[in-house]
Amino acid sequence: MDRQEIEYLRDQIMRFLESLPGPETTKLKDLMDKLAEQMIETQGDGNDVLFCGSDGKTIIKAVHYPRSVLNQDGPVILPSADNKVILAAFSDEFVQENLDEVRNVFQDLSVREHQWEQFLNSLAAKVSRAHAETGDFDWAGSLPSE
Image (cartoon, rainbow, N blue to C red):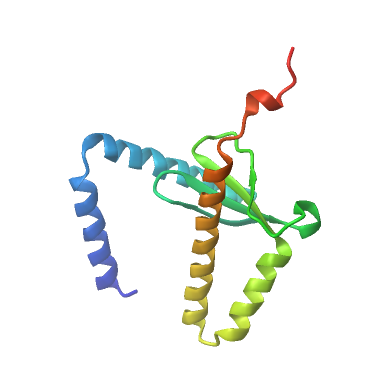
């Protein structure tokens, strides 16, 4: 992106934000703060993090582990201590197979990067659907009772 495109996008985003009602602006700010928090956490200890992003309502954070640990390719919805963060896992092998496919099929680096982003977006959509089907994790039910 050149400087002019970036300025145009910034202007569009600012007009959108200015048009939001007060409560919606607050919700968006809270979500962006949560996303920033997750991104900072990922940078500090992100060896297993595949991606971290938002669907506009929640934060979606995906990690990767060996298929032998997950017993599937994923997404496996994991418990999250924050109800604004959906945590999911995909198998290392699944991620590597898809990365290899993108590398082998697309020689142009910009096309390759775009295809990888599309793949990650599709994973985020899968996580969102899987989370909607499983519901929230019951922390109270998983803790030992007194």
